[in-house]
Length: 628
Image (cartoon, rainbow, N blue to C red; front, side, top):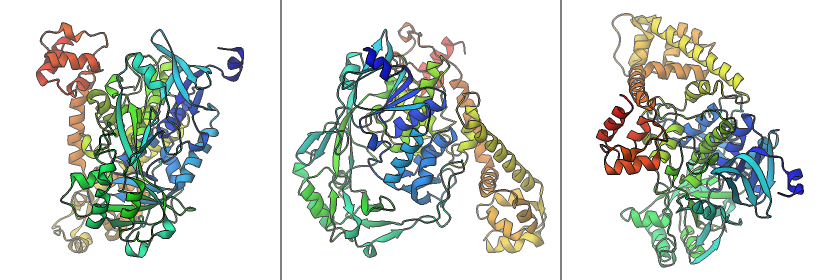
């Protein structure tokens, strides 16, 4: 390194490559742990850009955003400060399924993220492409840039998104790029492969962006936000006071027929795209092909912000020729006079199968090198952000030679996601769903703070002391409410009128409030109106504590059952397997188990049990080997 380079750059604790959702959370996490961080990005103007839909949260994804917030991440705070609509999805189902979702102001979201990063004293920035790593004796020591500059560090977190050898496809046209108007990143994949890493290809896509002034919203179905909007962060962020509506419209057989005229020029159908796309967010042409019996598909018309007319068409992702996209759009109800800002496109990019990582997201081949986000085969802002946060935390801990911070499957959706990736791998873009979690009743969006914030005690994350105090106060309040409901009796004369209107049988003798709450027709708001003493008692508690207590009381038996299951699983998670274990020296294991265990190097018996190809009899062999 030249003397000039030494003067330009100190040696950093952590370098984060890429400033998307994973990179931003990684930088903040490491910086809040006291690390000196460099955030390297090709373009400072696209920090935290919402490359796809302008929204955060959704089914399972909303739970992840709340978990990020509970662990000190910034995604929930930024979302609360910049959202234009809030909806709690699945309210008609049980609380395990409730999922917060916010429509965001795309430009304000990115601007707020950049502002928060720039205000952090531990974060520096460098705008240039990183095209290589400095690796010595199996350990990462920094990065090299396109200008030939070497920047040294103790750890590196790669969050390259869709930029690694990215190729954009629109019909028969293709060109290099990691995002519309931005260059692909080259050099890192080739170096990692030379170091022994396995790489693959995936694809994703985005829909056309439209001029909202050209749409007829009167012909569409309005989708307003919640009447009493909530928020994501457990901190003191603003509550939304005004909202913008989304709208719903549909494709039709005529739209499908027009789209089919371009199938022969589609990169997906003519074989030019080799990577697998997201199963649960397919392109419109893929939906027409896979669901040929359906004569229409739902489209969500989503505004991109307060001060723009640009509109995102959720559900119309496409890589068909731009003229085919435009002709088909004009046949959609409400789109008859549509004007298009830019067409949709598909993007193909490199990723690294995540079974090459440990549960800390550190690579097995290179010490102190961490991967987070789409480089691991995931899709979605939320999935990327939580990986970035965990990689940043663990990179900072690695620099301090401390044990990694790892979340169990019974503790967080984040734990489920990372365990799935590392233990099972993925051959298509991984998306989080509630169905992937065994402990959905425990892992609710309302209790992310009480589940996770106490786990940060002792880690040294900046700003968590106040959050810990708030969590303790919330738990005490919820416990006091629950105790009151368990001990307070209600007479038939006081409550039977309300029970009758609620459509549930009357009581014949005095009973506890808790017993009434167990009935599916009864909620605490209704009981407050019927019981003055309960209403008076609850006045000193906020809505969040009351809801938490109500859920714990109403679903008590289910929660206890899942807790018992989690304890049983935790026994296996506490049985450590060491990296030095030679599985090929255990002849009682099946050949497949020996191969898979050697490749994944599970941290615990519990993780080993979730590896595809490892049977219960193989687990018994491992239990005997560790003395159980």
